[in-house]
Amino acid sequence: MANEQKGPVDPSIVNEQYYHGLLPREDIKVMLRQNGEFLLRTTEPTKEATRSYVLSVMVYQEKEENGIKHYVIQNHHGRWSIEKFGFDSIKAMIDYHMSKGDSISKVLNNVILKTPILRQSWELAHEDIQCVKKLGEGAFGEVHKGTLKKYGNVIDVAIKLAKLEALTKEQIKEIMREARLMRNFDHANVVRFFGVAAGQEPLMVVMELADCGSLDSFLQKNEQPVEKKNEMCVQAAFGVEYLHEKNVIHRDLAARNCLYGNGQVKISDFGLTREGTVYQMDPHTRVPIRWLAPETLRVFIYTQKTDVWAFGIMCWEIYSNAQHSEVFCRHRSVPIFAQNDNRAARLG
Image 1 (cartoon, rainbow, N blue to C red):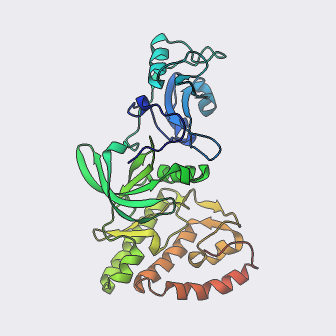
Image 2: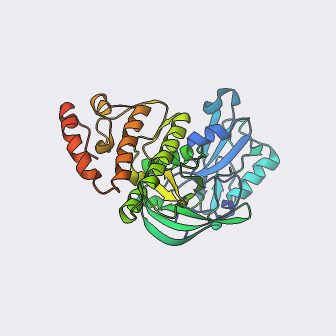
Image 3: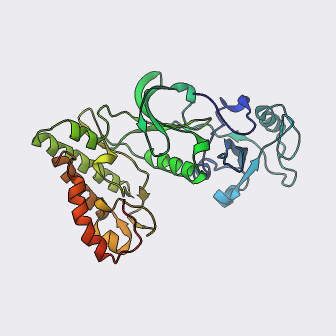
């Protein structure tokens, strides 16, 4: 894929294992533990500002997250620097300070680069990912069928692509938050997450490929016997049970947010998912009201029981071939919304 980044680009660092691309601070605080540990990352480009490289270094480990210092790397007339000397490349600058063992800061004498923190197994390289066929459009960009080279094997995958210039900073954070959540999941009835390629553009999120696509679309196009529908409901139940055991609330269970492949229902789409067993809902946020439990609409609080209600609606979708859920849900949503005194929850 083409590299279309905004701002000065240093090609010398793309293949360096300590370069983590669009790594959010939520991951940095977990990776940097000991004094002298460091990594290189990049900020999100916006309409107002170009992308910048940032060197994050643990300086005061006793302060944990607050002991990490972040230094924006400057580029002046092709020379890269922080507070001291200019170098032809960022790699040369890092190599110099590691070999000399001196501080990269003029103000603090203990910002010393000792141990580079290398990419994690879920941080993928763009050259290992190949897009083969466009499948459709997602919330933040295109979805492609493709392949991933991993541990010497080539596997079929689904790839979400997002151009950073088309996203807000908050949307990029949301993509990375969802990816951070998904890498904790490992269950046959939850879509598998392989990793993120965030070293250059486009940003890629790589997941398991379900050959039959979304569950609602599959049901609408392929009549299934009752026994198979029973099996689908049980599989979805296993997936929900697993997520709740992992201490999360999905918050958007529906046939449209499940995939079907190799005879298995796989819960997907974790954009609204939150960790914990209780979540206070913003009453001004758009929500999928037709799948929402009435008590959640009344008090604006999600619990895992909210997921159980949505699971029941999803089972109804499965048995009706996802054909009549709009009619069913539209009728039941009106009195519930009236009960809620027309408060600000927006119809989803």
